[in-house]
Amino acid sequence: PDDAGRTTATTMAMATMMRCGVHAVRGGAARRRRGGAVDARAGAEASSATTTSSFGAVDGMSAETCEGLKRALAEDLTHLFDAKGIDAALYASDVSFTDPLTKYDSFAGYKFNIDMLREVFKPTYTMHDIYQTGPWEISTRWTMVMGLPAFPFMWKPTLTFTGLSIMGIDPETTKVKTHVDTWDSIENQKHLSPEGVAEVLKQIFDFSQTPALETPGYTVMKKFADYEVRKYDSYLVAETGPGVDVREMKDGAPTKMDPQAAGQSFNSLAGYIFGKANEGGAKMEMTTPVFTNSGRMQFVLSKDKYESVDKLPASTSAAVELKEESGGMFIAKKFSGIATDEAANDVEKQLRKFAARDGLQTSGPAALAQYNDPFTNPLLRRNEIIIPVSNFEM
Image (cartoon, rainbow, N blue to C red):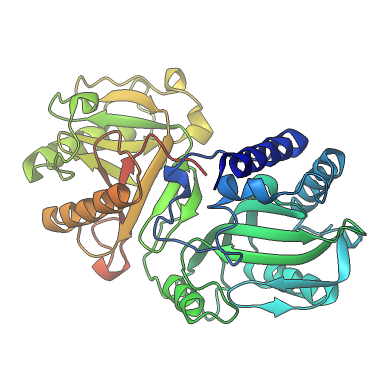
């Protein structure tokens, strides 16, 4: 384009950003496809920085309208799956809704789908962001986690989806006229996408078991076909190992401990939580997972009960250190079976390859998380490799 064309495009983009807080710059790495969804509107989110130049400052919604709609929709979506439900006044009676598996052409159908999900799957919905992506378009970033009924799904699978909702606004009524959902875990976003069906079935028939024990809290920020990006809350641990400071360990260090060291570390930590090596002899509740890395092992401690390190029973063993992990952003990949050195290292290599492909910078060593006791059928075990990352952006 010539200089005049570039100047016009720049001016329009700046006017749009000033008019309604458009998230026009989100970080190049964050906009990569990263093995996930291609949005139904040809990459609405991924290309938001470059398409803002086409938002007509005159033709699009005003700043006041935009901010009002964002506030109203953000509030409304907090009731997506609760008893109050969404507000019909915000939606056109003939609003069209499409996602990779369902399609409706009325508010009644749209509402039916929401009610069905609430009653059958008991979903939890987390909205991470809401922003303008077109002259009359507002989009949201979200995570949804659903459970399935105990019968016939006796293994109690959990389904997790992350994605983008693209809502087209009617300029005359300022109501939502169209609503398109995309999923990060698939490429083909069209209605009745075979890839979407396969993704649902893959998650349903994941037989790995997570014990009903306290575990570090996290939110799946993006779930791709290959791996997840998670935001972990802080959590308490009892840690032991042969004097290796994890902060000094390098990326690529073995995730599994030497068997003899692992046995010694396990016994030291078990002594602490079972009351043999803590002041007062307090016996603690079991938690999950057990984290291991070359040179260290960690048992998670109940933050619900103890809240902070200074409220934990003091260790009477020089081998056991009590600490709080700060949480943060991690990439994670699950695998079942026996977590041998070879299996854990193979998964770590895959995860690092995905991170490099998607422009994510790993910022520490990998850890192996094992959720089940040794008596659990290997086919039902939940094992994971997690690696911290420093540059993830939505």
